[in-house]
Image 1 (cartoon, rainbow, N blue to C red):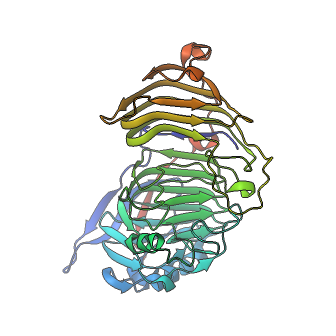
Image 2: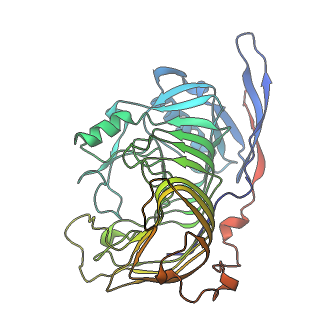
Image 3: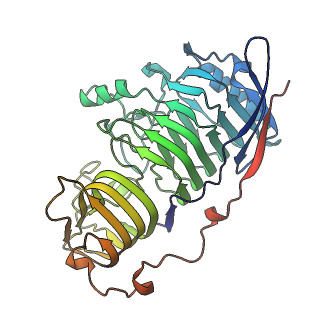
Length: 421
């Protein structure tokens, strides 16, 4: 796994758009606005030009796909952007194109359809071997793209609402024939920006870049009930050169989870005998976390397997995992760190971390087995296995790479939307 540096709570690079409204006799019509993105486009169109109706009940799947298919003709001629105006736009799954921007007005809400037939069934991900919820295939994500170059999904904090309760109930009742859809999934793609949006009530994971590179996820608010099943926030999966920053996430599962498939099909940071592979050179810093069971959790005893084809002798290698400059509040237990006796987790470094325990916190805040590492300026005091060689690294602080990743050098620019009439 390449070094993945999650830069959280940095200065927001993608600013909110400035907008100019042109008055009409019926209602304000957006004619021109500006926003910040990694790429600007030469051609603009509004969803209403393709028959879109934002009344919350009219189905707009055909309008979205017709618009995007039409705009795909501009991929080699300056690219294109599709504007979603104020309204409630009910839709099923639709596919994006390259050199393309999807922009949501602040009062625009994309609503996921409750009709399963509006969600095509596609093959399981190769690195999972099967669907996550079931043995079979999976429903395509609400906003989906594969083999794309230069795609931007952004807005003035517009909303994408997956209306996930229907899917959650089917999951709990064992009524799913296929794995639930995600809100946004981009596969086998390069140069991806997902920014300045509010994502609510996803059927399952919210943002899933997979087998992709040069990915920025920025300024995203993700909200789901804490009881909703597997509503992970942002899951970069088998990706390289990825940056996640300035996001606020409340979910029913992981907030940010770095993944690379399942068992011999891939390896995760929660791992076990039979998974093999490695997770190494991980650097996480400047995070604020609230209301958690564990601030840090690493386990080699995660027993879930896709099938029975795994090699019991395939032991994972977990090493050089670094955390620094973090604050956590209302935490039940500071850490649960469980390596494997036959393959201990090594090179763990935790520095400048303050964990405020909840009123009903566990009496022993740290549990560590088969791990080795160092720590400094950590409250509450870590377990003995992390108290070795204090101060060896950078006067006690975990040493992060000084060289920046290429994704950190990506420059955003001021882009404009102007209706082509």
